[in-house]
Each structure stands twice: as C-alpha cells, then as structure tokens.
Image (cartoon, rainbow, N blue to C red; front, side, top):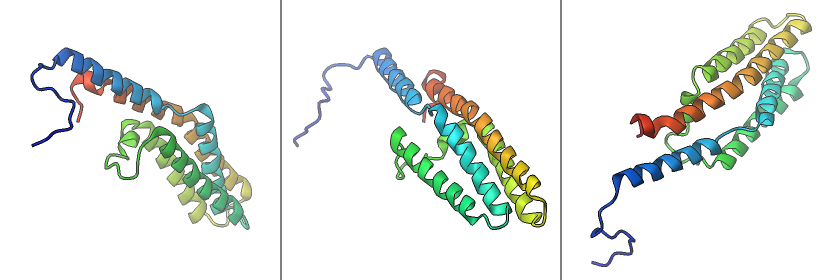
Length: 162
C-alpha cells in the first residue's frame, strides 16, 4: 500500500518537542482570537440599539439596525478568527469566557424583557434599560475575551486539552 504521508515511523518522536510545538500552536490560536477594542464598543452600541428599538414606539429601524448589525459583526468575527460553522465546539469560546459573557447575556435579556413587559413606560426608562445593556456588554466584553484567551492558552499546560 502506498502512503503519501511525511511520517517516518523509523525515527522516534520527541514528546517534549511535540508538546512545545502544540503549546506554541495553542498560544498562537489564543492570540488570534483577541477582539479589537472597537468590536466591544460596536457590540455594546448594537445591543443598546436592539433593546431601544424593541421598547421605544415607532423605532423598528433601531431594532433592525441592532439585530442586523449583531449578526454581521458575529459573522465577521467568525471569519477573522477562523472558526467555521462546521466546528462542533463553536460555542466553546463563549463558555470559556464565562461568567462574564453570561452576566452580559443575562443583563441584555433582562433589559429586553423589561421593555417588552413594560410597554407603556416613559422613553427615558426604555433608554436607561438600553443604555445599561449596552454599557454592561461593552464593559464585560474585554473581560470575557481575556478570560477565554487565558483558558485557551493554558489548556495544554494543565492537561485539559481535548
């Protein structure tokens, strides 16, 4: 049987060198998933626009801008980072950034629920809920990002690699 592999089984593999190569690759991947500052700012603004658009009267345009913007931003980040839709662990990055990402999600869902339930509230309350969701998303985005990068970069060294 013919093999096109470059694997030469007659030479032993140095496990320490292989581990170093794997750690270097893991560190490069962790560095690549760093989000630029403007991603967090834009995500916070788009979350605020979505919440405001859902709660304010005659503001469907804001909600549409927020939803379409969030989808476009996430698709761009997937493309930039190199995580494919076929990747079965695509939600792993969110889990690695927990609890920061979970807190931001809970605040956003709470703001959305508030503006839906309190339909007749004054516009300043809707704006406050939208602003709070946007600010929390903006503030916790870098913390979730750093936490996920730290965990991704340290998985091989701790023996937690999958």
